Image (cartoon, rainbow, N blue to C red; front, side):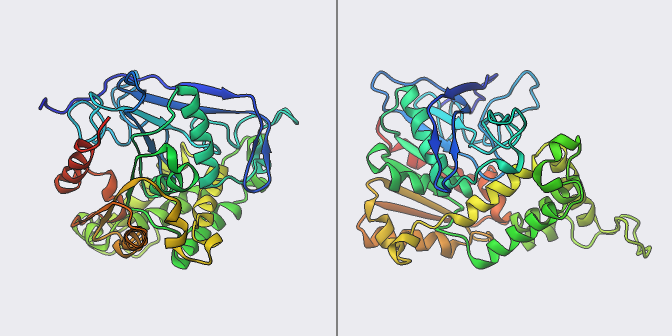
Length: 374
């Protein structure tokens, strides 16, 4: 086995689709672009393709780097030669979802009917819509069936949806740190984050582009709320504890505790590059995902359509998408006698564990990908 390597310098590509897309919300996009990246080579039978689906703030940039070597893909520790998802064996595709702010058509794009940015008029999108556009891109790339579709968090929901929308087009689904639907608590966190944005005076009903401003205060608060849910209490305690920046209490509302400094830094950084309308759309897509809804609440009935084999992975300290939520998926698959492997990884980092280079976690992924025939 070679030492793990980067896929190196990569270049995003753009696929333009001129045919209209009708969304589950009833909205219609007359045309749209999808930005994507690929790593490795598609084999002669087009049987070695793996689709990687991104989470809330992720993008098509899964691995490698751009001209700036510091611009490393968000799952670069997982994808590449000699890595668990080995690009010597697999052709890996990363796609930026509709509604995003990383190049695919979204609220910042021009509405052809008005000549202005879509803004608040951009239609609601769902996980199912994203999967439908990913299937269209696969057609464009000559991929009739994916060897695997994988993702963490919201990306895992997309992998699950693939098995229901296109059961014949996916052989393996890797559902990592995900859930079959959000709990009321999770929807509540998303709503608090959205209200922070919606009530920012610079939001202007979603048309802040025309005003030349950004609802930075709302985005900052939204990210701070979200970031708290991505980390475990143990991870926060180990990294920050109750450390005071000045060594003692100074009795003011500026930063005193190191955890406050960290959250403000994360909020400021996020507000500097992410789009508020995209945040709103994506969190609503999370809220709406519920494949069991149309089956009387039965996840087993929903997953009866699936033909893929599954790997489901959870993390012990992930309280946002707890292991119990992953076990719901496993039980529903077992009920349908679907082949499923389950790994519960003891990792202290909370929900963000799926992004980290944990030896046990990566060992599970490597072993699973090694057994996939192409």
